[in-house]
Length: 353
Ligand SMILES: [Zn+2]
Image 1: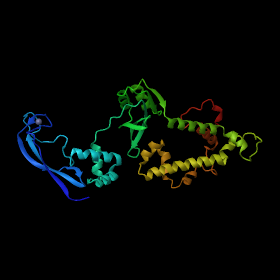
Image 2: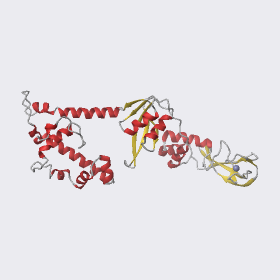
Image 3: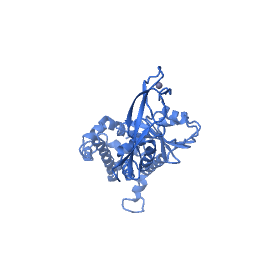
Image 4: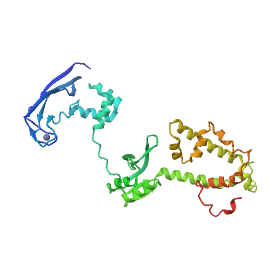
């Protein structure tokens, strides 16, 4: 490509221009200056306009603007370094190829533009009008490493995100849904603010659980069911005999290597998660909130350099503790899915030794 540029002198022939604020026509020239917007290249050469722009007085005394520069409709806009007819191919290249590759492509047909300038140009384009979805998925998204949550709305049929709300409030979701009465189905998780927002904003729509949560819930239910029936496994597995042994008495369960190994693995996983988050710069408070842990649990996990350090003390097998005799019961409750110490011991009062 030649580095010589073609310069085209351009003067406006119109007598005056309209004030951008009040719209009054003015012919009283205040001053003039030169602009050099780049135009579509010709024959591999850069084309630059040398455009004489006049500044007019606004005739309207009530107008806040005293003077204004003229724009040539279809050719220039305020502050732009490119003519309108160069802007549109640059925008098309940017939309297809984005910053770095787009800038390289633009250079190939004779326009020098940086990748960040190309991205800024894309940012000024008007948002494309997204058709209102019929089936909308609602979920939360996190920014600032999980410290701030917002709501993302996805068109489930086209699988494209349609909007982001800055918070996860029921009222924001309800307002968004209310503006789109064509919505027939809302896919959501069990979060109470989504349920409330969907009911208030789209009372006409059917609410369903999304596929991820259905699989997730099914997975958890299957794990609980298998854990509850592990006695059946113990009969067959130990010496690979079909002959059924009588089920082991509950006192022995705590000593089974499978059980203690599983417990140790759970501790290892929690220890690794806590330390990964600490390394990523999260505060202990924020980690406690994210993992739903008490301050004391978190402190013991965070203070232990290795997960093995945590096995010393009350959970270690060769030391006894007042909790020992309750451990089988606690493990059983855990397997049944109770994670809350206030959950009532439903119909099992005889289980506590
Ligand atoms: Zn004006």
